[in-house]
Image (cartoon, rainbow, N blue to C red; front, side, top):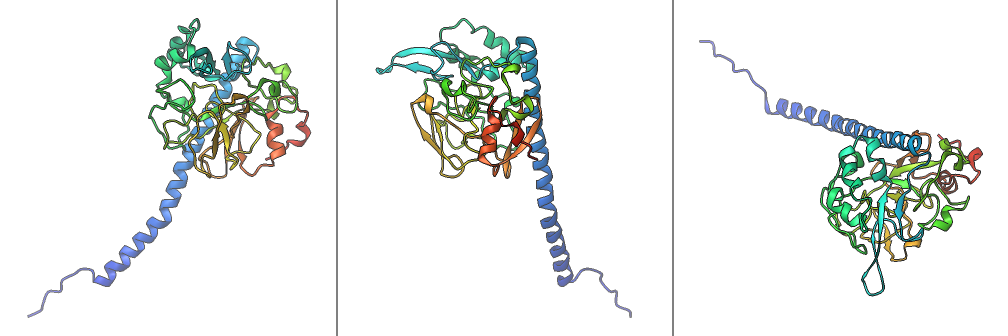
Length: 323
């Protein structure tokens, strides 16, 4: 009698197949992750492109770029917070930032209509917080950044229940003080109570950074960086004084950071505030220029060149041909 032979895999054959599958997965996984990150970077870049177009539409309507923030208390007060006196009593209120003014040009009329109702308020930022500041619209988010929808209450500011985003206006190459904004060496397109038009940008729109990326600390609900309606350095503004993703500490009103990812120093001296452009992209961050072009800026860019890109009339355009 002939015995029937059972077909099947031996243990060694199964181990070989499993090993081959594991190798293929190991080879494919990085490629899949890279493809996903490339898509996220593309969306982040496109967000800045749309904001750049919104800036030009705003300028076409008003003949100037929007201010970084408005403060009726004076040019050197801190944009975006309720000010207090030495006794802790209210001493005045700051107004809206550049993001709010761009809302109708970003097809966010619903948010803007809520803001318009508060234009006559004596505490616009505090009231705006209740209307839209606690919301986190998609256009302020870079997909490469780990999203944190939690509301924050920045330390050092009388505001609460705010959400965060990833884009900021370039304040120039200096600190958060109007005297530096008025100089050729440090003044940029944006500042507190600014009204810069195309003719003021002597270096040329294509040689001047308008917008860039910001990174916030998702492990903290008291760090002020990234708050999208908050017209403060590190919140919705940055400086080219330090290069992208710099290890030099930011100086901001509310600070919780590590020595590497989010280096920072807290300060109540508002005119000393300065913050770098930051992102979660490997090697640098994106920046939108005055002409609407969006370029990736290496974190290893020469500091002198980066500072020159932040100024509007420093006269350095012949030295800014970089790829």
